[in-house]
Image (cartoon, rainbow, N blue to C red):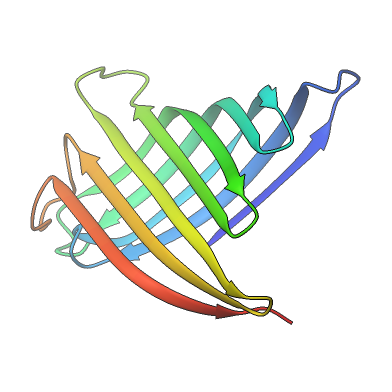
Length: 159
C-alpha cells in the first residue's frame, strides 16, 4: 500500500513530496513494514516523449519480521531515478530505480526497481509487461533470499 503526494515549489523543475507505505511480504520475511518519508524531487528532462526525475528523500521505517525475532526502528535515505519514455503512440516504457541506505550503517542498503512496458492494442485495451526486483543486504529474519523478483503480464481496460 503506497500513497505519495507532491507539490510544486516556486521553480518548475523542483517539487516537494511526501509518502507513506505499508508492506506485508512473507517471501521477504516481513510481517509488516511502515515507511514515512519526505524530500525534494527534481525534474531532469521534460520532453514531449521522455521525462526523467530524481528524488532524494529522508525516510523513517518501522519493521517487524514474520518470526517475531526482529523489530526495527530506523532511518534511511531513499534516492530514486524515475523515467517515462513514449517513442511511439502505442508504446510506453516506465521505470523507477531506488537506492535506500541505512543512515547509520552503510553496509545495510536496499536496491529495487519497478519497470513496465505498456502496449496499446486498441483504444481501450493495453497489454502490460511488468518487472519488479528487490535486493536487501540485511533482510528480515525468515526471508527466503536477499534478492527477489517478480515478472507479470496484465491486460488493462481503459474507460
